[in-house]
Structures are given as structure tokens and as C-alpha cells.
Amino acid sequence: MQADDIRHLRTASAEYGKTERLKGQLQSVRASRDPFLLTSDELDLIFRWKLRGQYERTQRRRAMNTPAVYEAVTEAVFKVVDPSPDYEATVRLGLLTALPGIGVPVASAVLALADPQRYCVIDFRGWRAVFRSARTVFLVPEYLRYRTEVAKLASQLGWTVQETDLAIWEYDRRQEHGVA
Image 1 (cartoon, helix red, strand yellow):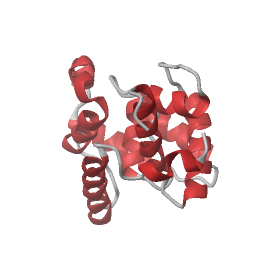
Image 2 (cartoon, one colour; image 1 turned 135 degrees about the vertical axis):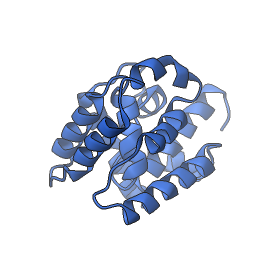
Image 3 (cartoon, one colour; image 1 turned 90 degrees about the vertical axis):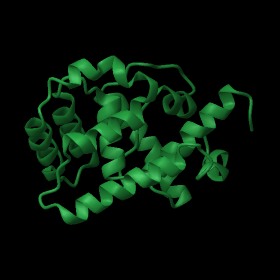
């Protein structure tokens, strides 16, 4: 995949407006809450955004997490800051995936919406578009590999990593449906 393949798709996804609103909400929360953490209601918005029709599938497992645990874990997640992007992402994803019902794809959505400059959402569409191979299970090493490639494209485009990822997602969706 090349930057020119997705340049025209920056705002093309039907999810773009909803994504921007959610990122804006989280940016407001980040500006007003010190230390930064996410409540169970804020996380639920992210879960619904990421999981869409699959939201119910893991709801029972996520319900094991109390509001206090969500707040404590997300506070710890956002306190982890390291000059190595891979190390920081590894620790942050590890903390989030320790929560029942939260795998790497959902954890990546939390990071991408809360810190869109540096994080993206991993899923089968992005992976397929970038690496031209099918994959449905993602662990931290796959996330790091994917994020590295998306960050390269983001740098070429002058976009955030999250915006680039959403354009990649839209690119794959269109390829799948034969739409240019």
C-alpha cells in the first residue's frame, strides 16, 4: 500500500464524523481531567464504536470490570509514557488486555481514540490492506508491526496515525465491494 492509494479517503468513511466526535469528546475529557482516565461510560462509547454489531458478544465478560477498575487501569495506562513507542504501546496494551473482555483490537481502539497522533486500531481490514494477507487474531507483536507501517504512511501524508488507519479501513472496505 502506498500513501497515494488512500490520500483521497481521509474523510471518506461513513464512520469519519462519528469518529471525530468521539475523539473530540475524549480530547475534552483529557483537557479537563487530571490525571487522565476513562470512566466505564466513556469506555462503553469506545466499545460500541469499535465492536458495532459484535458489542453484545463480549458484553458479559466486560461486565466483570467494575467502574473503579476501569478508572484505575486507564489511569495507569495513560501514565505510561516512554520514548520508545513500541515499549509504551506494549505496556499500555498489556494493561488494557488484562481486563476481561478486552483484546488487542479493542484496546487499540481505546488508545487510538484517546491518542490519535500515535495510535491506530488494528483489525482484519487494516491488516489485509497493508500486508495483503488475511488475519483475524491480533496480539501485541502484530499491533506493533501494523502501527509501524501506518505511522510511516501517516508521516508521508501529514495525517495522524488514527486518520491514516481509518482511510486504510475505508480503502479495504471499498476494495472488498469493488468500489474505487
